[in-house]
Length: 325
Image 1 (tube, rainbow, N blue to C red):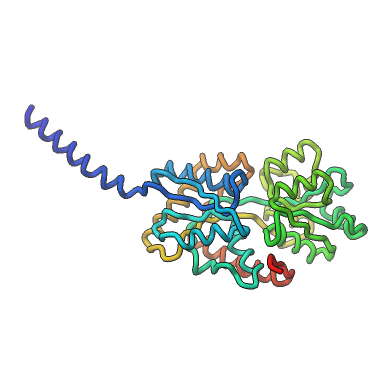
Image 2: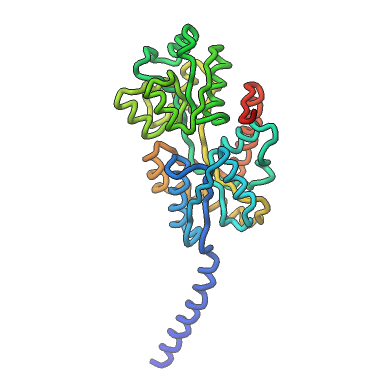
């Protein structure tokens, strides 16, 4: 009996000694920095990911820190200056990295030097929308009407230099119809202005607000921006199907770390993010905001960022898109 108790006691002591060591390997806190205000789609994606990372043991606590300002630049600068230990990460639409730098005469950051790509976590298509009061039922009809009547040419977006703005510029270039870009402070405001007949067209992200407005008969969705029809709107054709071959865009979200992260830390964090993005519960939670989960190997994320950065740079230059006077 004494020997058994001693062995049990020794085992308990060994386990107790090991547990603090294992527990110490899990950071007490990690944070996901988001460049937009709470309540939006980007914030929701980050909070859903934070819950998943916490459940996977990435850190004892994973908080979302909203650093809204300058179209996402403030959040990039926050992560750029963070300690490169993998506990401070940027959750951002890729457009902040691939479009925004080109819209400044002096880029506010260098995507490939100031940040460390780690993974992709979601993708979101956009939609070309008109008021239900419009007689247009196809993209062609809407463009023909805008060609005939300049008052039907303005299109609303979430702002200058957004993917919606770039998409609109591509439609203008391909069609030859001089649509007029009308930027607002966010996609929600752009959609509300369309519903209120303050603007005849809008390019906005697919969202609960958009689909609710469609169900209520207040808007008509003419086309979506993905390579294939989105499962959230299977009856709506893509821009490619509407005659705009090669005009494809999605607002995919990426996770970036500070510069200078150690290779082994990069590997660990990237693997955890990819694993989190493949969890069924994570994908199901994103469905509520009509966002699709997207998991990509780190190497694929780096290549896509490079490719889009180059492509967006050409478009921004061609269209003279700038956020500075």
